[in-house]
Figure (tube, rainbow, N blue to C red):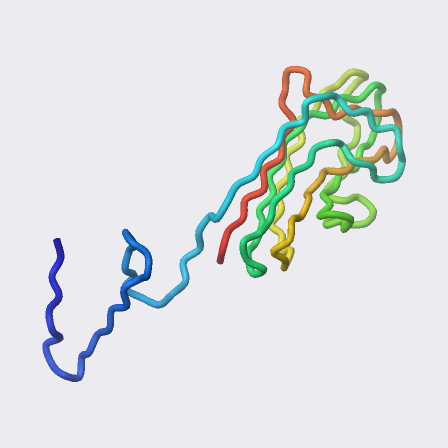
Length: 169
């Protein structure tokens, strides 16, 4: 239940606007509150070998269609890297469609000297993007060999995944 009471004086008018939809919450200010609008997630089902010194897809990818052009998209990804030889350096980055969102040289980071041959390292990346569109966008992790040996983005016992979360500010 609720009650409405008149202000204590005529100079203290208050206006409440009721929403068009049912079961809504009235706010006591006009400030916009941030909220999570949608979540999309994907897992990598197979191992991908990276043999290139130029950025190529790792197969870790997710699609999302923003509901508003002013929305932001938070990308969170976690994946294991296995390298076949010692003293390897691997660069990883994140693309939105065909745009590299990281630094052109090292992307979102260089992972060097990953231990001896056969070493597995878990990589975690987070990035907040403003795609300024209501069309579908695709976020994909790319990788390249910076020096040393080939590497694999693998999912043999450890899931490789990526999540895109649309939120308003």
